[in-house]
Image (cartoon, rainbow over all chains, first blue to last red; front, side, top):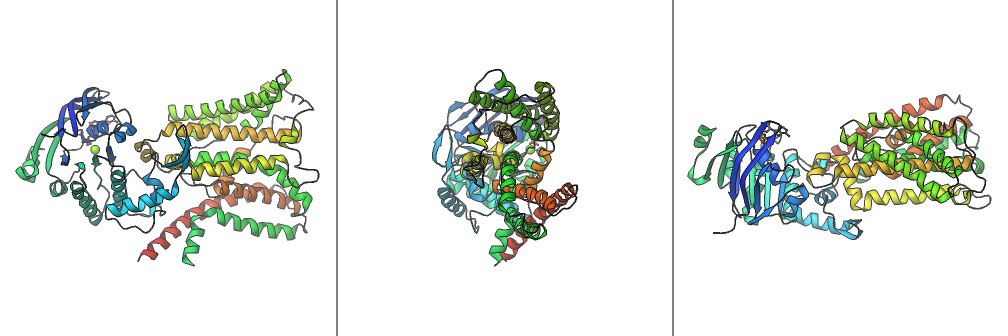
Length: 243
Length: 327
Ligand SMILES: Nc1ncnc2c1ncn2[C@@H]1O[C@H](COP(=O)(O)OP(=O)(O)O)[C@@H](O)[C@H]1O
Ligand SMILES: [Mg+2]
């Protein structure tokens, strides 16, 4: 048996009185694409925020590739290879694609204490490559992200995660506010994760989308995991009946 | 042609530059050639660095998504505290550094209070506008302290050489402007400033320490304002407690006229300089054309509104061109 890429043990989280996560245990193996479903307020985003370093659990532990980690910031999570894409999209519309791709991880020509001159030539070249790698066709790395469609933006975000060799890509409702066509594109990206050797966690309201693109379904309700089966062994009706 | 048009629309500071050229031509004629005469340009260029440095600081802060209304007061407080410190026997260099340190502390307080209590910086710095002005008057003791006569004005405000067009302050201004422009467009910290102002949540989720970035911008803005105040006082020879009144709004107007977005994320140092030049040209041009000086604020007001509308419209046009080019 391979070492799980992510293992959550007895995670608990309270928000001033609200018990948002109750003893959550979840093991994810490399290469899996896990669909995480559940009603609003079930605790999906809370779980994801712990994994992406935005929040910290009140108790319990997270293991990455078998080792206990303490994720205190988004940077910590990224350093461990966990990259998260949110519904609002983690791209800055007023900046170019090349600059967006490297926010916080700019290649530097020289630096003092971490501050220095960006290697903009390399940023452009590498962003062209990264975008081509996810089969996205954009005119120029200098185009502003604000000029892209919602689906293209999510594509660039996925290209960014892949470029930085993330092991796990977490997508929290990445298709909200997107048109049907754009949504299909994003689902295509999720399906493509496995071929790139990435592990995925895909959160969506839409059962169809999750069933189309994931090979395991995990459902949460009231802060607990209430269902966990391979996609092939279950059906949309079964999951619906549960929630 | 379309490409050219798009570049133009994407860079509102170039529109400001075009307007500047038009205004220069109009006022040159209206003033019977006095506007661009050596003596007049010399006078304007003495004042320009002082206002432009303030506008550059305000612009950087606005790009990272915050606002500073206290720069006019800090502009007065820095040289006043320096004068008081000098009069207690501290040497000039130390007094300047202490004065700038006071500005840095004010910037830090502006940023800390704004972020810690989630108050709009518009309000925090409005408070600081009163606090810093009050402190300036209190420490002046009611009448301006005298400056020693042996201050190194050759380094700050004397003409570069006898009969030169520019003062040393212009050299400081050019140097600082180049550094600020390089900071914004060439360094990773500049990338963080733009990301923080362009979309705070996205920057934070990419691991940018957004609060620290903002606090540094607040401090930079205050220090630049204080340094600009120092230049003015060294030029005038006396630290008046009332200098810099209204400067905060002119600085914001200069930034906006130069294409800085109120919402953050967009703006350039070059734009801030163009905006400042426009304001100074209008001020000076109206006087020279013997127009009632009270029209000055009217003109700045119209220009500011015009700039905000034009920037929004240009942004829309630019996107449209892009879409059409794609079809
Ligand atoms: N920042 C927060 N502060 C307080 N309560 C929160 C916060 N985030 C989420 N909650 C609460 O925690 C519970 C789980 O929310 P969430 O994880 O966002 O659910 P989901 O993503 O499954 O819709 C809900 O009751 C929600 O109201
Ligand atoms: Mg959610």
